[in-house]
Amino acid sequence: MPIDPLSGPDRRAANAAPEEPDGLARRLVRALVCAAVDRALPGVLLFDLEPELIARVAQVFTQILTGPGKQAAAPVVLGAASRDEDLWTQPELSQAPDGISFRLRLGPLIQADGLTGPPPLIVVPDLTRLSVAGMRAAVQLLGADVAVVEQAGLRHRDRPRARWLAACPSADAGRLSAHLLDRFAIRLPAAGLRLPPADRLLDTVPPAWLTAAAVAASGRGAPAATVTDEAIVRVRELLGPDTSVRRELALARLARTLATLHGERRATARHSDEAAWLMGLQNSAAAQPVEPGSGPTGSPQPTPRPGPGPEDSLIAPSRAGQDERRRPAPGRPLLETEPAEGIGSDSGGGPAALATPYPEDEAEGPGDFAPLRSPWQRTAGPASTRGVVVGTRRVRDLHDLAFVRTAREAAVHQRVRPFGRFTILSDDLHRNVRAGTAERLLVLVLDHTCRGDWDWQDALTPFLQWAYTERAAAHLIEVGSAEAADELRAEVFVARGVNHRRVLAALYRPPGRATPLAHGIEQAGLALRQAFQQHGNGLVEAWMVVVTDGRGNVPLRASHTGQIGGPVGAEGIEDTFKAAAHVSAMDRTRVHVAVVDAARQPYGDLPFALAETLGGTVIEGRSAERRGTDGDGGGGTRDR
Image (cartoon, rainbow, N blue to C red; front, side, top):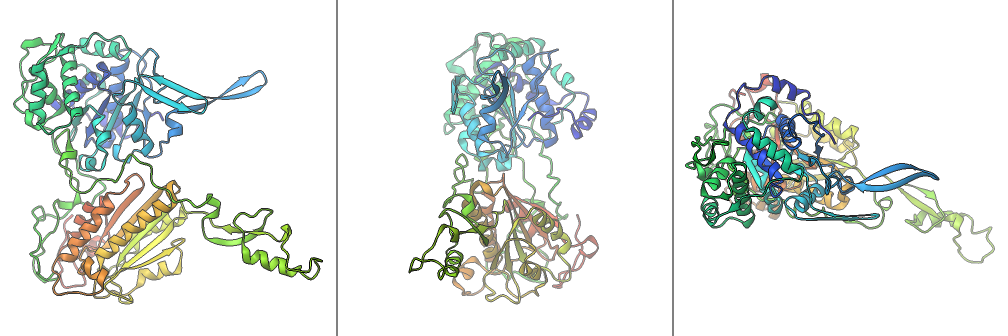
C-alpha cells in the first residue's frame, strides 16, 4: 500500500516547518542513517510521534536508503487489516500459450531479498493497531539472519533486507509484546518533533554518511568496527544490570555503527555514550556525543531533552484548576455539596508522553494477553450453521435440518404414500435459513442517574446511526434506572440491531437511586470478550460507548452478592476503574471506546479519568449553554 509522502496536511506542515532542524530532528536523521548502514539495526521505533509526521519521516528514510539523486520507491504501509496472504505472497496472472496462468510470487516483505538495489521500507503508522499477522511478521524478520517462507507452490529462504519504521504512543507500549518491542533496535522518543524539509534535514548529515548508507543498503557496505570490552562495559552501565540481552546488543551495535561512520576501527565507551545520547536515554545526560565528521577529537554537544508530547486532539480538554487531584478519604460520603475533589492521575484524561526509549518499563495497567497469538475461535461447523433462524428452505442433504418443518411436510403426504408407516423422503427435507452474523458491535452503557435535565440523544446519535447503517449488533447495559428489577445490578439486553424497541425505550427511562456503574463496565468488558471469542475474526469492529457522570455508588461486591454492608465511600468508583482497566487491555485494533461526559458537579472530572483508564476518548454530552447547571444542586461553570 503506497503512501504519498507529501499530501494534504503533510504538505502544509512542510511549508510551515522551521528553517533550521532542532536537536531532536538531528538525532532522528542520524538514527535513520545508522539503520540504513547496519543490517543488524533494521527497525526504528518512534514514540509519541505526531501522526501527520510519519509520512515525512518515511520520505527522509527512503531518501537515505536510495541515495541522493535517485528515484525513491514507495514504502509499504501495514495496519490493522494486514493479513498473512498480503504480506508473504502475491498472486500473479500471466498470459500463457494455452490461456491465462496463475502463480504466486514473493510478497512485499520479502520480495527484495537476495536482490541488489535499495531495500524496501515497511511503515507502521501505529504499532498498537497492527494486526497479529503484521506483528508476527515483524518478530520473524527484524534482525533475523534468515527468513523461511513456505506456502502452497512457493518456498523462500534468504536474509531479510527490508527496513522498518514504526510509531507508537509511549502510554500504550506496555500493551505490546516484549518480543515485538525488542526487535526494534533503535528507539527514539519523538514527542515535540519538528521536521524541516527533507533536503535541509539531510544537509545536517555529512555527505560521507549518506554515501555510506546508500552503499550499505545495496549490500556493499564497508567492514564494521570492532566492539571493545570497554564499550560493552559502558553499555551495561548505561542500561543497568537488569536489562535484557537484546537491549544490550542493540546499543552495542549502534555504537559499532557510529564508530564505522566516524571512520574508526574500534568502538569504545565514547561511542556507547553517543549511542545512548542518540536514543535519548535519560541516564546519559552527561554523555559526550561525538560530532559527526569531527573524528575522535570532536567537541561535545549538549544533550537535548525530548520535549513534551502533543495533546490528543480527540480528547476533550479538562477544566482549569483540576491539574492537582487527590482521592477522597475512604468512608467519606460520595455526594456532598462541597468543593469537588478529583479522582485520577492526569488532567483531561490525556496520555502522558514518557521521554525514554523503553516506556514499557514504566507503563501502568495490564497488557494484552498473548498479543502475538490469533484470537481464539469457537466454531461449531461452517458459518452458515450459526446465527438466528429466520426461515426454512427445501434441500436435498441432511445438513442443518429443520426437524419440525421436515416432519410437518412429511406428515402432509403420509396418506398417499404406500409404505404403511411414517416415512420421510428427500422431497420433505427442509433446512434452516439463518441470519448473517454481524461484523460490527455496539456496546452501549447508559447511566440513567446522570441525565438530569439534559437530553443525551444528540451525543448518542452518531453512534446509533453508525450501528444502524453498518447493521451492527447491539449490546445494551443499563444502570441506575428506576424501573430496574434490582437496583444494585446492571441490566443487560442483547439485540440484533439498534432499531429494537427496547433499545429505543432505554433512552427515556427515569433515573433511580443507585448507580452500579462498576458492574455495568464489567458486563461491557465481558460482552466484548465473548463477542470476539464467539465470532473470531468475523467481528471486525466494536464500539463501547459509556454515558455517565462517573459517580458509581455501588461497589462491585454489592452487585455480585446483592447486599450492602455499610458505608461504601469511594469504593464504587475504585471498582469502576478496576473494571475499566480490564477493558483497556483488550485488542485496540478492533475495539474503540468513547465516554460521553454528562458535565455534572461535583466530581466533574470523573468521566475524564474513566476515559483515561478505558483508553478511549471523551465526547461532550451536555450543550455548552447548559453546563452551568445540573440537576443535583451542584451547579457551577465548566471551563473548556
